[in-house]
Image 1 (tube, rainbow, N blue to C red):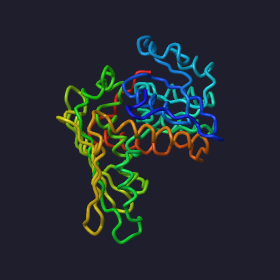
Image 2 (image 1 turned 30 degrees about the vertical axis):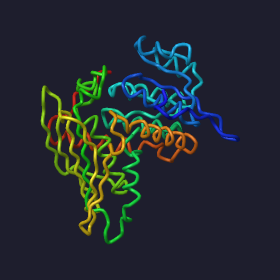
Image 3 (image 1 turned 135 degrees about the horizontal axis):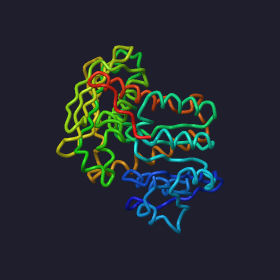
Image 4 (image 1 turned 90 degrees about the vertical axis):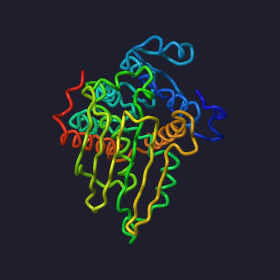
Length: 330
């Protein structure tokens, strides 16, 4: 599925043959991966997997279709795998792919439990197989423009604080994927699912520094955290503020960076793309470009560091406002 006005491209002369990509989970986010894989010369879609026949039906006759990810891993001869299943199933699917030697790009959050995240990261390092968490907002062109304008960390006007707002009415965004509203499958509410993207942006703009949760405030509705205000601190003294809202009328996704000299830099992640979720098309292209680079040149940590950092912040935020999230359905 190519966005309007953007024809598919093939590899140029002398280019590497496209990597064979598998996609597990054909929910609301899958369309962006499918479009990116069609658009980018680095990839060719080789197989898809979903439990639902109606989700597989449009792909039959075009690519290999599976209802079990293990059978896909065994028979599809994949070079890489995108995991876009409900959050509670990430750990199982990612582990099976890593054991099969297939690099993984998994939707955020990496998993629900930091212990499971650490086990996956260890498996990735042990097998030498990359494990990348997909933080699509770090590929937003407005965010990248802002990041390029920031002074270096040791400059007199270095970054003093970052505020990220991630506000939407969740029911307008999930389509038929009602598992987002099931804390056992989602991992919680807005903190578990939108939090990782927001936390990752704070880390990106502060220079990938380690962060701690200084405070957290959460508003609940029907057992789901639908609003949150989380304050973060870095060892440098820089601060981060994350505002999340799943009950917001409309959609606001923006960043404000305050420098030590008092000036501010801003980025509206939706700027220039007024259509519903229109910014996601180019952001998911960025994810798959990054995934291709990671597959070609795996980093020593297996690429799991960002996913683990966001997962730890989610757990720390919840620890300040309620008992641990109930164990996911396994």
